Amino acid sequence: MLVAFTVLDVSKNTYEQNGAPRQLFMGFGYNPSLSELGERLDILSFFSWMKRMQKENDCTWIVYDASGYAIVNKMSPKNIEGLGRKPTAQQILDVLVTEQTRPKRAEVMKNCDLRGLYLLKAIDICEFSNPQARYVDSRKVWREDSAYATALDFALDYVDRLKVENPRLVEAVLRKDANAASQLYLPLEISEAIYLEERFSVRAKFGPTTEQFFDQAIIGATAELGMPYQTLRCAIGPRKPGYLPDENSIRTKSDDKYVRDLLRSDASYKSFVDQYLAMFRKTGESLEATVSRTKDELQQRVI
Image (cartoon, rainbow, N blue to C red; front, side, top):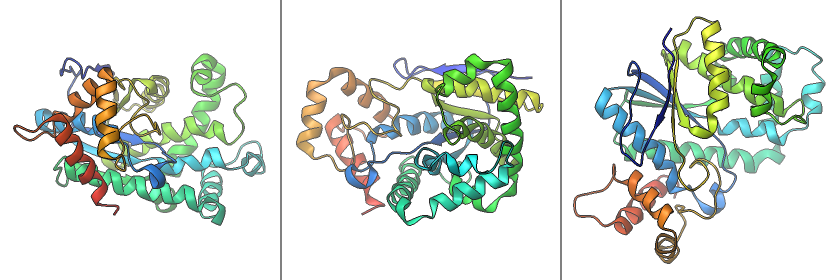
């Protein structure tokens, strides 16, 4: 079985892979500030790696929009506890979908819709064609594809066993006081990897180093199913991962003065932005010009 934990080093602009996977995915989580502040330009840090790996290895990507998982943190744990001690995956998904449709969750779903639009625009900026990159919305998967429920049934059982066999790993992912709803995050993450392998033959997950413990659980689960699997991770730079909220960063609604002042006052952040935008820079273009152009391009789809 092929297993790799590879950290991509953007500072050295180099990476190594064990077996050069041909189908990969990355999951993008929730940002509650999209409607107010716009998308973070830093999300392109991940797409810069996708673009390079596609170019060098002719790989294909699934851009998995997991922003819909945010509903797990919004809902009352009583909604899950009411299902009993051992609910089925379909029962859980029905509750999550129902919660997403509640009027009081409209703002959450608005930000999820925006995340989808920004991800589609990032794919355009990379000039990926089909099948080089494909966008998949977790909300649509939950509602329409029973294969995800099958994967979740396995993941729920696997995590129950993991709590006994490797409690430290579970505690590294979930707080000890995690309620019945928030405990779903780990099995949901495992399920997406299994589902994407079965549906699209994706056998590698890409993400930031902050996801290392999720990756370990995924590797264990896929190994138990006999799936050859790899995880590749990149450093996040001087900010939170680019799909999360971080107001001290460049956003699509940031004005030029804010961007200019931020880049001039924070050398480490400027270096990070310079590195990931190298894949998108036009000949002779300054960093500030590249920032302004890509920021506007990323915003265009949602205006």
